[in-house]
Image (cartoon, rainbow over all chains, first blue to last red; front, top):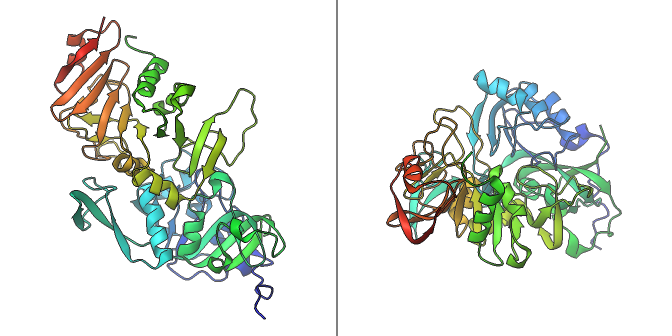
Length: 228
Length: 217
């Protein structure tokens, strides 16, 4: 007998789902602009983390309740890795960045996606033409491949990934909706622990296997959206 | 003000796009190209967030919160659209599948270097997907004003702003002219009505030459 029925990943609280957050953790936070943001999970990380974490997210706050700005406002972030931190609503980030409390690493969006993908796929790093000859190429190793400069980029794993999905079954199989998918499956794969806030939990077996966007093997715990 | 309106400028950009092109539009002025392409061109727009195939919302059409463009403005999916995660979205962008990207810029050099993400000395800036698009799209079209707010040329011999990418720009479309970047320098293909060659060169920080048949007043 082999089945998924004993593998219930649905947690009864956000605290149970996330568990203890290690000191100095790297936390991958889903969301692209105002969509796909795990607004129930973020406030827990903001409230239950010691200063010194690194957060990785496309943005640094977009002005909606429960966005990553709450983690910056809690004063726990030592470093942010982002592609577009300059949203006018990223005020909590901006204030602490301007005070020198936060290091910022700006990463091209496709490079961030691939660094996460590499981490999840067990690849240590890769060479990309993106950023070659620019200040974001920095002082990293350059290799000329087929006549074109490429820069070395390392994998970017997280100790914790928090993302949002549209639908999940109890085994953690996920479906995303429209453009809110974005970085979410990549972060889920790159997280040593991955917690998913889902809009809808459906019975095991009700998602067609061909329609699973991310299998539950990458998911540690689920909470229904609206769970505290 | 002399020169083309943004709509007229967008029409020049649209005319540069190959038929049936997949195109990514940057935030700001390039967004106006979505309304300028003709149905018979068969253009499909890609967005960094993973949408392949979107259009502007019709008047009064209800927005879907999860369907947005690069500027986070609501748009609508077209028939045949696909939505993918970021790894595949940037496989499209970086992997050479886009026929063109239209981006804004602070500066473009005569060699096709361009800068569009950070002002010199700025402590903070956002790059988004610009660098991936710039190295991956088959054509990079810069759509911008010809000069900056202080009247300084944005087309220059060498960029002084931090680069987005080196030697990637193919065309520059401003309110004053359509310019192609060639191995022999910048070649003007069209000048907006009412602007003389001397006036155009005076506000351009790099030497211009003339295509064989320039439309001019």
